[in-house]
Length: 249
Ligand code: PGA
Image 1 (tube, rainbow, N blue to C red):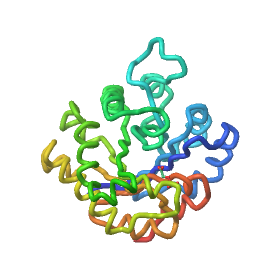
Image 2 (image 1 turned 45 degrees about the vertical axis):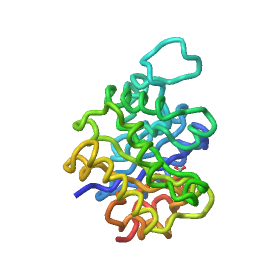
Image 3 (image 1 turned 120 degrees about the horizontal axis):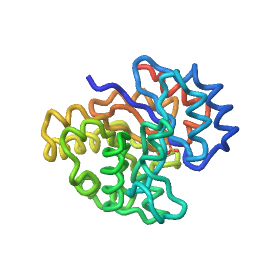
Image 4 (image 1 turned 90 degrees about the vertical axis):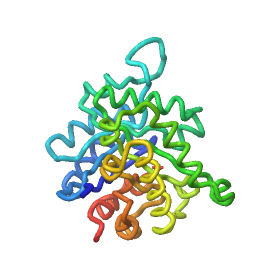
């Protein structure tokens, strides 16, 4: 049985003080025995969030890293820096980073490998635009993103990776994919993982759905056979996140 993983993606929200206050308010509400819960926060919030969440069982993640350990990369943050702080997860290849910061499948792949090498768990994002969905190429597109993003990853390492399927048209729009639409693509992702890494590995990998997940739609989405939790943006900034964590089966 795959353990569900529900991660909040705060994006560029909350100052360090706001972050600490929010975690203090949420740490009891957002804890779960049955699901893994993670807060993925801006770099400057990592320290206060790690402090507040110590001993709660709630994991902490970053939203990006650089694929080199150190060097002349002004403004960047490396995997060993995150690891030493006590960070365990990192979102990689989010569509906003691909769209606004020029991330490519190639750079995302280098980051995935660096995260794994450094002992961080990558949450690797994929997903189609509305145009791609309307053109009927969603599955092909996501298969390519998986093949490129995971190139060179070993089967053993792959078991640790979390995949987040996030249709771009559903992110921040209030337009959630239906549970059937999300399941269809998550199933296709598991199929490509089976082709690349074998059935046993594919059955272990957690695949999240992301895109306007909220307290009302989480239960239906998370009940689907291939959906193992969610990557939650807007609703993770509010108390509502605890309704998502405690979705009713
Ligand atoms: P949303 O964002 O829940 O606000 O749609 C999801 C994400 O971008 O990870």
